[in-house]
Length: 464
Ligand code: GAP
Image (cartoon, rainbow, N blue to C red; front, side):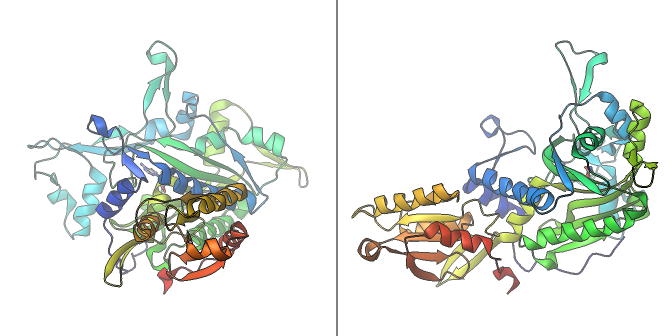
């Protein structure tokens, strides 16, 4: 296991601040709040939907638009129960659960408690107690994380189905369908984004670990002797994806798993970790799954899943390299990384320095006053953004300073103000979220100007 770098967060942000901003500004709300909430479940508000969509769109772009060796898939959430038998999830997708036998009766993941004791230099064999009340703990029992339900009107043993705990298996069971239609030869990939469900024992830390979440997974099928090369290639590509979207390099690292950490299917896994306010934690895993999954599904389904190489006359089960990311966890990392509080002329400003491509709103349009034709002119500019397909927001409420602050807090990179001079010479002020620079530009052709800024690289002020 690689040692964690000594980096300390040099921007002070707590998870509580992120949770508060997310709620205040309509990114993420606790779910079912009017009924007292339901643990660790969240609903995405307007800006959260736009942000997460942008994260997913950037992922699709990296997988589909920027290359021609990956195809898309959207498989069902409920699959044949045998899928989970073959994948090993029925037997082995478990966490060790312990319960406090003292006062609080809380349930914990034993492996997490052990890690915490070890991190403090203690001996988990001697010191494992309930972190809440210090009570004794029950012996561990394996708890399967799959959510179970029934298909059809009667709940009986014969019609048990599971909500998928990962999107990956939907890809493996469609391998043959894709081979038949896509005319791809290994190396090629199948990519999918979708909801997954895990009955986590200890969800928490906002949207970092929830029981319902969205995954962005891609299975890259390769000739066996190319697996090592592609494994390293995908680790680099995926790390660079986060960096290109503005994540601070100091807060990102690749951590190869030790032999004792590897999943049953993996011959090598590296986590891409981010320095969240809760410490270094997994953002995405890149795994070399060998031919485990295709072998298992071939055995359990009795369908041949081999690839026939017409050039060499060879038949083989491709090996698989899998970059598996979480859309919610990525959105959280981008939010945390972007969050800054600074002082401008004696006043505090909270700003989300999101990469413009991730920002929920690209440009705000603000009439200085609600008279003298300014609202009409601002609406006209809004219409031009709509026509160009650029997410813009019209905001006429409150003082101009308040409106700027609102837009800063949702990370809008540019603001356009329609003022008295606009009505005279058809120019507007264009304000930059990061530098706070304001320049006077023609109102004519604004969508083109914003599109050009979106297309050119963004120099993150976080990098100094
Ligand atoms: N197919 C392999 C697989 O599912 P994983 O490491 O269990 O691997 C991949 O999950 C990614 O999915 C994680 O790196 C994380 O970003 C996200 N993820 C997993 N469990 C999650 C949870 N309970 N809540 C939010 N995201 C989760």
